[in-house]
Image (cartoon, rainbow, N blue to C red; front, side):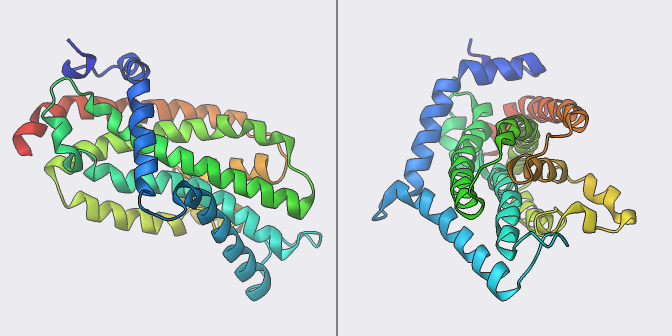
Length: 276
């Protein structure tokens, strides 16, 4: 019997399911990425063009129009603001793309539900793979622009995967939960879109956490994106070592969220076929 047909819901079984089906995840992820640009003139090249255009837009408006600065440091140019901001957007877009799609992952793939041997639990992983691909492209564009502007790239970027990994776990956990809930409550998709839009402004994307009044910082820190965005800027832009203690604590919480989301998905999946 396939692991997907049993009511497996332990953390070990969650990892085993991803490992067992990783080739299928890669195939479906590749098909999804290519399908997004199918029919366009330049095809996959849009994945490079889009982040580059966004960087140009941010650089122009924040450096020329708003003349914004990230800090009072006189050596920091307005152009740096756009680059620092873009780091936050890379993290936010990764999370937002997965979460916005999660409530409809099952309802948009009814044909998979009818296949008893298909591992439905990998659908959020496929969405994550697609989002990670675009995040890597955006990161590449960011590093190119950073090298052009500053003439160097911070060596601490090697820590970035360790910062992003716990966010991937958190995102998968929430995606599993929303994917299952979206089968039974169709309105959840509309609610999720609204929440994700609000999350852009309550995350330190356009501003550093230090600018938030102390009485509100605790609330902002409860945002799952806050720590990841702040630590990402540390290693990608400022050349600082990440706060390992905070990341370890975040990783433990992320593992719990991932397991709970997986557990909830596996417990409710038996009713998917009846509802759909």
